[in-house]
Image (cartoon, rainbow, N blue to C red):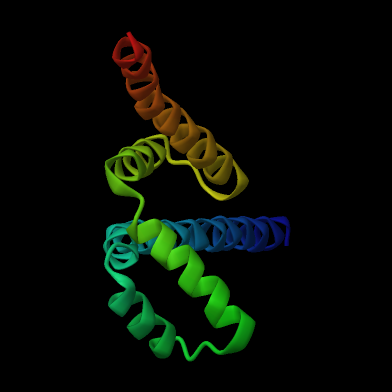
Length: 128
């Protein structure tokens, strides 16, 4: 009788271990899929106002949501090389959410300041 109970307990424990490991494999597949689509989203953000308009139409946006989307899309499109460099760096650092937003804001501000310094340095020389 003890052997029967012991066999039942061992089989239950091994079944639980097998079930506990199965979702981990599914999670790895789920996390791999968004990583593959990240470059596609980055390419989707770039473009002119026409592509912003077409993407807003695809998403069926209207009113304030469309206005907000268009404003952000056009700002991203006009970002220039500094924005591209900041986006690339944020991607390399694997930033997301508030951390990415904060990093992008600071990076773009630093890039604008760096662009302004050469122009400011050139102006005093011209006044002589």
